[in-house]
Length: 222
Image (cartoon, rainbow, N blue to C red; front, side, top):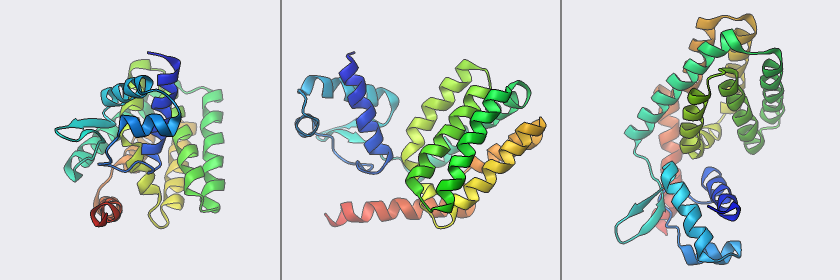
């Protein structure tokens, strides 16, 4: 697989995560090649990588489309994500280094600035840094790989969550609880705080579904 294919995969993945390419969008190789100024071969390779990650899927008579998850599937994936991150927190509470705590703290401060400025895009990326730093702090490479893989599949939906009114400040407050527990070496508090932060249930689930429905409306009207 060429470096160009990897770069195209990253570019297309970012468009999926940021909502430029919405769930259910058809991915035409010719159009993508024209837009990125490349031949169809690296586009085809990039789509193959995204297919392996589960971010796109092949549908009969439509070809490659951005994966569109059902509400039930989303709940199941967030449940697993919550447990993977809780496991990261359990290990990190014992293994995290001062440098790793500083990295999480730096990401947390970036989240603070973004939340205060109501900048959902900046918060999205700072939030990812915070969570990836937690995976690293587990010092379990296999666990970090699994968490990262699922995180990538859920990126578009985690981004949608942040667009719900007042969610940035709520998320920031939850990050604070996680960081405080890790600094104190309080394993159970860290696990509980991470699990509560990631799980999508009750009002948060309803808000996410409402956001998905709003995204579907333009496609339906078009």
